[in-house]
Image 1: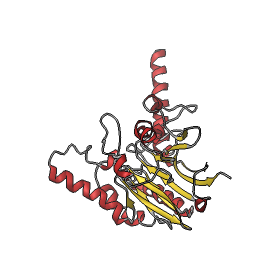
Image 2 (image 1 turned 60 degrees about the vertical axis):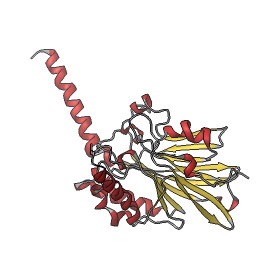
Image 3 (image 1 turned 180 degrees about the vertical axis):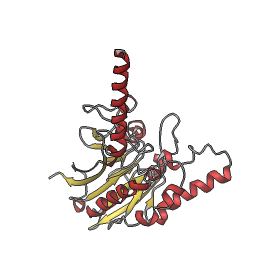
Image 4 (image 1 turned 30 degrees about the vertical axis):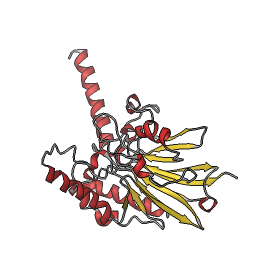
Length: 291
C-alpha cells in the first residue's frame, strides 16, 4: 500500500475521532464560571448583588439524550439562587416549535428580581427563508410568546428599574444589533429612554459587536452582557477561529480604564451540537461597590 494512502487514512481517522469526541463528549462539557466586578458608582444597596447570565440555548439541538444536558444546565442555574437571571438570546435554532416544547422547563428558572431576556439573530425568522408577512409575524409572535409563557420579561429595546433599600439599578435590553447579514433591530435610545446619566445600567445585547459600535460611544452602560459567538465552539491552545471575525469572542473585556465591562458567554448550546475545548457555560456575576 502506498505511503500516501496510509497517511490519508490516518488523517481521516483522526478527523473522525475529533468529530465524534466533539459530538458525543465535548458538547456535554459544562462549566459554572464566577466573576466579581467592582464599580465606584454601584449603589451601596446592590453591593454583593448576584446575577446568573446564560445565553445561546439553541433548544432545537437538545433532542434525544441531549435533553438531559439541558436539564442539568437549568438545574445549575436554579442552584445558584441568584438575585436575577438574564438570558442574552438565541433560544431557538430556526423556529419556535423547538423551544415551545420546553416552556415548562424554562419556567422553573426564577429569581427574586426576575428573569430577563432579549432576542438573538436565531429568534427572528431569517433562517426560515419565509416571505409571507403573515407567517413571519406569526412565527415572531410565537418566539416572543415562549419567553412570556416561561415567565421571563423580554426586553425589546426597553428597560426595567430594580429597586432595593430605596436605591435602584437599571436592567435594559436591546433587540439584536448585529453586523452584515444579522438583524439590526436594536435601538439604544429607545432602550434607555428616560434613564438618567447617573444611574447604574446593565445592558443585555445578543451581539457583542454592538458594544464597541453603539453601546460604548453612545451610552454610559457600566456592564453589557452578550453571547452569539459560542466561544467559537472550538479552541486550540486558547485560540478560537471566531477571533478572526470578532474582537470580543468569550469572557470578560473592559474599557474606560476598567469602569465599563462586557462579558461574552460561550452559551449552553449550539446550532450544531459540537464543541471542542470550548465548554458550555453559565456565569455567576457578583457586583461590588468599591470601598
